[in-house]
Length: 375
Ligand SMILES: *Cc1c(COP(=O)(O)O)cnc(C)c1O
Image (tube, rainbow, N blue to C red):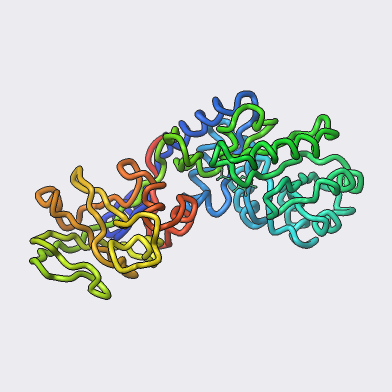
């Protein structure tokens, strides 16, 4: 009861809120399971589940039958272990020394060793581990020639994996090249689970699924491929509070730099969200010459209509053109920044970035809440 009251009070005073819809999250997991055929669908929950909140996301996925998870850093794994005592938790990065590996061992995490250095550090530690082989991304991963020797030095891995560089583009030749290299490099690992596909890879066809797929962004509603319609449901809705309405006359200018000039009478809404919240300044309606992605900048959604950002986005406040829906807008209303009415991918594109960066940038001033299935 006290918690309910607190949540309600927070919602009343919040300037920005992020709503996580758990039913679409579960539905996306089911879609990925269908897409993956017989392969297991692991949940990638690094970076606080892409900014959505580790706890509600991890618990929901666990309830949906997800048993394997990936995090980037050992401490993220420790936090996840506290939530899910029985999950299989793989750690992808940050394993540069023995201390990190010992931490993994103590928390029952499975480090995915991705360099000769890491293999060396794991010698004699006697713990389950995975091996990451590079197939062309040139980020993390052992050279293919070092994969067998690593297994000979350490024993049988629980997983061998690699990562696709271009999986969001189904016709990119890198996909087939990496698939071929991965198949060859892992051919001698009979009985060891293999994993290659991220979200995009899960939609490249059954050849890419192997034993386990590792989707992140698709679980959270981001488009897994850049060429087709997005088959995923929106999971996160970001909104900001309207704190002021202001009439503009012909010739009035808006925001820093006075880069926007009203060409007619207008009504603008001032909302409590800005670049300090991760609502990127590059999404400004004008005055940011470096943006090439979308000439007109970001838009909000309110009263059933689109409301373009007007002038520069500032640290704490953003102005939206609500002339078209003036009758449906009042102080205290929420304006959607992305979510069920505005795809997160479009909102990211308007700021010259991708859904991953937009979601993981959302700041601490967003009040986070979940709706949907009880967990
Ligand atoms: C982040 C990450 C994933 C998930 O990628 P998405 O594109 O979000 O599906 C999978 N594997 C590795 C190695 C990653 O770093």
